[in-house]
Length: 107
Ligand code: SF4
Image (tube, rainbow, N blue to C red):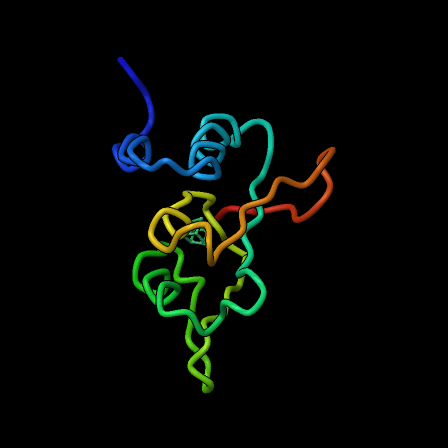
């Protein structure tokens, strides 16, 4: 009677503190905090980001004319797939304090 999708459990094998942090956050974000994902500075051209174009279920990543990956955060499902696919070296996952930050809407 557990909860949490398999991809989160797979993250346990990673000895990455940010991965664990994100995993813990995934358990509570629905009613508590809202993750905010950013492409880290200077990483837009990193090949690892290209995976996000494929895996993001909301299709929020795209490649521009310069071959760099862009993220449109509006419509983010907060599923964490992009972070798991690309890694925390190229993507940042932050939690706005005190409810400040982007208000995500679904639908
Ligand atoms: S968290 Fe999910 S929906 Fe949001 S950008 Fe990443 S893959 Fe897309």
